[in-house]
Amino acid sequence: MILSVSFINHTKFQKLNTVAATKYIFVTGGVTSSLGKGIISASLAKLLQARGYSVTIQKLDPYINVDPGTLNPYEHGECYVTDDGAETDLDLGHYERFLNVPTSQANNVTTGRIYQTVINKEREGAYLGKTVQIIPHITDEIKRRIQLLGETGQFEIVITEIGGTVGDIESLPYVEAVRQLKWELGNACLSIHLTLIPYLAAAGELKTKPTQHSVKALLELGVQPDILVCRTEKSLNNDLRRKIALFCNVNVNAVIESIDAESIYDVPLLMYKEQLDKVVLNKLKLPLQHEPELNQWKDFLGRLKNPINEVRIGLIGKYIELKDAYKSIAEAFIHAGVANESKVKLEWIHSEKIDNENVASRLEGLHAILVAPGFGDRGIEGKITAIRYARENNIPFLGVCLGMQCAVIEFARNVIGWADAHSTEMDPATKHPVIDIMESQKKVTQKGGTMRLGEYTCNLVKGSKAAAVYGKSRITERHRHRYEFNNKFSKQFEEAGMLAVGINPDGDLVEVVELKNHPWFVGVQYHPEYKSTVENPHPLFVRFVKAALDKSKNS
Ligand code: GLN
Image (cartoon, rainbow, N blue to C red; front, side):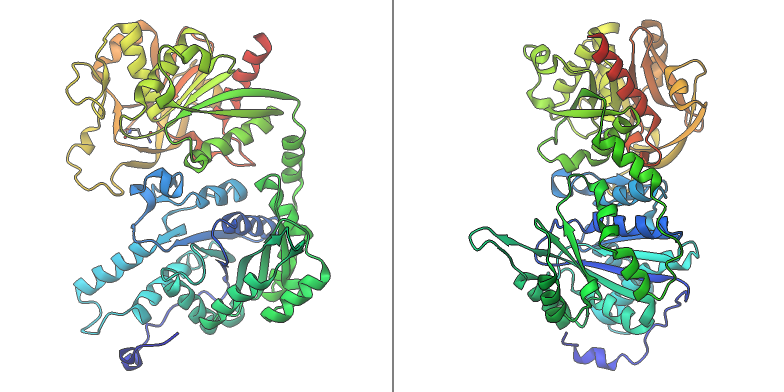
C-alpha cells in the first residue's frame, strides 16, 4: 500500500489498549462474494465454543450506510435485530443461531458508522488540528471497534468477519487495519482467507489459480493469510493441497477444504473433520482443551436429516424472490421442524399474486400460513385476503409484525364490519385506524435507527394460547416497527373475539393477539424468529409447526 506523504508526518499514533488475553481471528474472502464467510466464521466459532472457549463473532461491512436498517431487503436480505436494538447484517443471525449467545451493536460495524464516529470527533476538535486521514484515523477507529468486544473481558476469542472481497476499494482500510493489528498484537492474531477452487468441467480439473491470485492480492496489502479455507464442489486431493500451500506460503494442514454442504448446519462437522479448530488453536498457541462437545448438535442434525412427518406451510410476503429477505423465519422453521421431527416444506407465496378469486386455489392444501413482516402497502391486500382464508378455514395462522397488523385489519373489516379499516401507514385518512403510528414515533423525522427496536417485555394473559406456548407469563422479545394496535378500538375487538393477550407493561402496547374461536390463530407485534437457535428453537414456531402437524393429520 502506498502511504501518503502527510501520513509520514503523523508521528503520534493513538495507543490502543489491548487485552492480552483475547485472541483475534480475521476472516477475509477472495475470488467471489457469497462463498459463505458467515457460515465458516459461525462454524469455527461453534467448534471453539464446543471445546470450552468463550467466542463471539463480529461483522465489518464495507458500505456507507450507518447500518442496514435503511436498506431494502432486496439489497442484502433481512435486517437482523439484536437485543440491544441494533439493526444489523443477517450474518449476525447465523452467529446467534450457531452459538446461542446474543450479539449486540458492537458485533456489526459499517464503514458509515466508522466515518460517522471519526467525523463527529473531528467536529468536536478531538484531532487537535491534525489532518484527518484514512490512515491512521479511520484505521484506528476500525481497530478500536475490533477490540471493543475483547475489552469487555467476556470473550477469549473474537472472530472478525470482513465483508466484501479482497481487492475491492471499499475493503482496503479494513485489510490495512488487519495488517496493523497483526503487526501490533503478533501471536494474538490469526488470519483466515476464504477462497474458491472452481471445477472446470471441460478440463475435468479443480483450478487453484484464482486462489493464488487472491492470496497475492492480500499479500500486496501486507497480509499473509495463516489458513486458507477453500470452497469447492469436489474434494481436494493431497497434491492439490500441497500446490496451494506452496504457492500461498501456508502449511499444508492449513489448507482447509470447504466442500458444498447439504445444510449450513453440516458445516461445523465438516470443519471439524478438516481440523480447522485444531489448526487455529495451535497457531494461536492455545490448548486444545477437550474434544468439541457436539452431541446436541449431532442430535439436531440427525433429526434434521431423518424427519418422520412433513408439513406444508405457506410463507406469504412481498420479497419472496430473495429467500434471504426472510432468513430468520426460514431458519426458525428448520429449528421448529426438527423439534417436531418434521420436515417443514415452505411454500413461498407472493402476496401481490393473491386475490379473492385465486386465494382458495393458491392456499389450498397448506397446513399452516405465516404472514411475514414488511413495510409499505405493496402486496398488503393479498396478505389480508390470505389471512381471511386462514381464519375462515381454520388453518393455523401466525402473523409476524406487519403480519399481525394485517390480521387486525382483516378482522376489523370482515368480522367487526369496518370496511375501510386500515393501518395509517397505508391509509392515513381511514376512519378506522385500527393500526396507528405510535405516539413516540410521531415526532421522528430521521429514518435510520429510530423505530421501536430491540427487546421489550410483554405480559401474557393467563389461560391464553400464547401463555401456554411460552409456559410463562412474562417474556421479552425483539421489535422493529413504528405502528401499533390502536387501543381506542380494544373493546370492539374483544367483543367480536380477537383478544389482546400480550401487553407491554410500560406503554400498554398490544404485543400479541389471538382469536377465541379458531384452533390456532396468533399475531405477534414482535419478531420471534430472531431468537430461535439450534439449541433453543423458538416456542412459538415449535407450537405453530405442531399445529400444522395436527392439521395435516386431520385433513
Ligand atoms: N410496517 C410496520 C410498522 O412499521 C410493520 C413493521 C414490520 O413488519 N417489521 O409498524
